[in-house]
Length: 271
Image 1 (cartoon, rainbow, N blue to C red):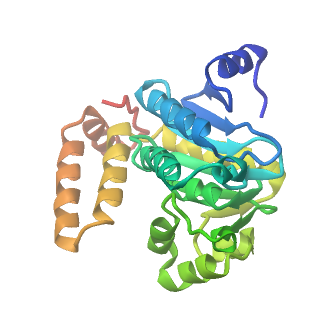
Image 2 (spheres, rainbow, N blue to C red):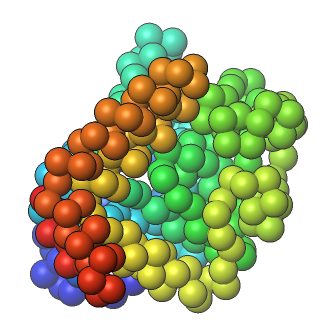
């Protein structure tokens, strides 16, 4: 990813472990703690802050989240930090990380994880909190926590099984073994696998498509899917109906339907 000196300077002034740039309605956020970009308390707080800021920016319609370098997306939590924590301190860190993952999962804008390398433990939990996941063919995935005498604490036991089902989730969680990008694709952990050199371009292409969609409808769609996943079918249908009603009150709905009738491309304004 090419970042101008000014953007690089601005990113470092405000965020010690994150880089970001905004262009053509797309924000690219890079976790920058080489060589393997581990997550610690400071990174969690920065991610929550930056994602919240990007959510409020009208010039951002879609977000790409990736890791610096080619070795890792995020190779888990910072074990050096965790080693010094007692149970009370760990609970506090766990609450901070939970806020970060929930913020990303429930952000009003779509978030694409561009998984450029290892996605282990907390790194895989971070990817699972995103809406869509594109992986480099060199990426590898695992929940190795069992081998450290702990379990995932950032939503891994919950989000994973909702995507792949309990059987596959338990296989990954119980054994703690690494899987390839192709296996992750087969198990629907990722949506697409591409050559490493094409990863960011593919993520940008997806983000560009999403950036041109009617923003209120996209927000309501995400809300309906996420909220409906955690309730019974009747409650889910009620949520869907409310979200559908909200889209009908927008100018973009009228423009989309008018464009369809007139056989032309719609010009959405986000209103």
